Length: 423
Length: 125
Image (cartoon, rainbow over all chains, first blue to last red):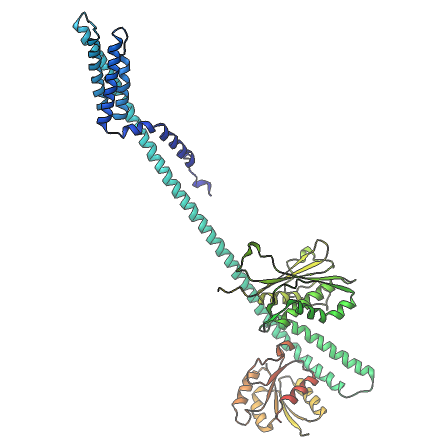
């Protein structure tokens, strides 16, 4: 939170604690002050008479005058100034009679009057002082209560403001993430549109001349020449035309993938078919294939041809990353559904490990970009991995490449089935 | 075996010329070349082909428009049409009909053996 919004007021927890302690200390006084005033006055008058009786019993030698201050002080503090005054006058009267009946003899009537007056004035001064003190105390209590209430209100407002800020921040973060997703989709869409136009233009301009060359080569092949060199020459021409055409086809397929034809497939069958397609190259390059299949994984809804293309591309990449030969490990397993979320889509994870040279750190972010390749010219269009990612995305899955600690590269494919429907 | 008449429409003269050369030299086909899409209807009315090989992208008119004109003509409405296209890959032509009005379509560059097989399959008997 911004520092400028912080207050110099005491922390609300401290204020609450202090108020609580004061409340406990003043609890008895408050309780007595809630009793009816006549009851309080009656009880205190009883106390005055009790003191007077002790005063009488102890005789004139032992002074009890100051003990009358106890009911006077209590009456003033918990009752009111009036009750204090009543108790004060009653105390003077009780004191007089106690002295009188105890047999105190005054030599001069004036001394008695003087004693009564000084006692009455002293008691009334005590009442006045205590009443003033009580008023000041009540004023203070009211001020504390008012300020406590204001603080509590301010704290509540601050908490509400903080909550609103948190909500606003969360909304902004959500909107920002949404904006980033939209921006990415727009950029991808614009990029694919450009690639699509480029692919169509290139295809049109290159495939027509290739068609002429192909038809020319076909014509010579059909003339049934006896010269084997001539036959080889024309066959080489046809091969070159096919290679050039295949490159354009890769570009076209990337720019305009055909609609998916999903069927329910066992992923292991798709992997085995893809391995069969590249078996010759794998054997030639002395690549050993290790299968670590979890046969309990569920079947997947996928376009078999497209996913075979994904596997073939990844197998060829792995093979090309280990020129002296190595080990290609294909692993399948069920994804780890943290928290046992039963609504999470059931799927399958596939890992493809090679023992090649791994990924250069500077290339990690570019691997799936169209036309990015680390292969020498003429050995890669730079569309293989881009196509892999595109096919996985249109299947609702994902692909990720990482360097393995043990050396080599790991391709991790995540296949999702349709989310489970509500019953 | 009767000779089948094939009308080849493509804006690239080298393509039409070489298709004619290949098909006629293999026997059984009489080929008429047309390099302007807008002339297709009149050429077809005159030539009365048993099958039309039609390029999809041409500068004066697209192949699907030409196909629509042919389908609207009572004399030519049942003449089989095979599209030739440069802007799709072989994979996309696999068992699917992307453009209405055509029997099928072939991706350029076309292998002559594959072309003849397709012609035999679709040519008007």
